[in-house]
Length: 349
Ligand code: 2P0
Image 1: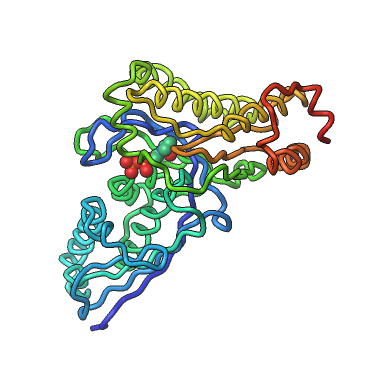
Image 2: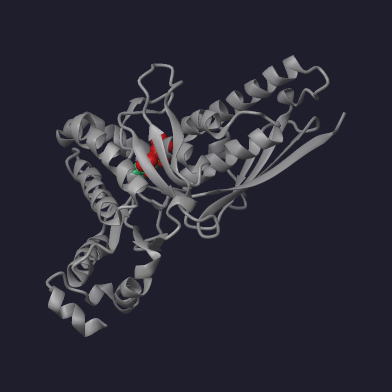
């Protein structure tokens, strides 16, 4: 019998291009609509998580970014996720009596983000995805990523999409127990390796309205919300999957920008309204539309999560075209007035 087991893993951030916003079941984290995301390259934004289990440990403990996080270790979601993984390990031990009974031991977890936490850059997505995959590795579970995505989903909805690289769909499912609400791969990154993303940090502070409470307020109070989940998203979900499969950037970009706008419109339509974007975010939106108009081609798309920071999607072949504007203008967006026209952009390149 071993005295301890260890495992380590990294999980990348995913940024939704078709947004999850609204729960039909808050306990199981079941969404009101399906969503799609692109999982960013691991080298850039990621969570690294290590876990150890030992017969000597006296309680489950978690350190987040170097500090022990009492709030998280007492959180219902974390407890639920750990309990589900321990139950899977227990079933495995039941089938194979030669295995150590580590499902009864406590776990110590250390997790580090290499980017601002809770600033609308999907930190909970990478965090819970890393946690679930790390503990599954620690427990030597045989479940595939789609199966594990159902557990990650209970930690944080968007986390289920970070178990896959590339282009990922979270299928909302219809069952009450959540057994069909899971992440599936739409296409691997190798299908469209030219796709690139860049993050423009407009503000790295923590957001003041958490996603969980923000989406509940939207579900309860927004008139626009029902149309979004009944009509807009189901159609967009199929169109976006097709755009990805066809590698149709112009369509992918338009759907992405429209969906970001639609999601933020339901936030603004909540009562009291929720503002995630700031003035810099709005200037970036204006700039992106001007750049596309300047080239007479859609070369870049923006999307915003529950925060003011922009994620821009573009194809590698257009990187120089895009960055010539971004480098010149983003560092001084305070002087950038929204009244600029396409012709004015000539001054900046
Ligand atoms: C998304 N967001 O699809 C959307 C777009 C933010 C805006 O998923 O309550 O942290 O933990 O399930 O996953 C953020 O919500 O919320 C999110 P919970 P989560 O990425």
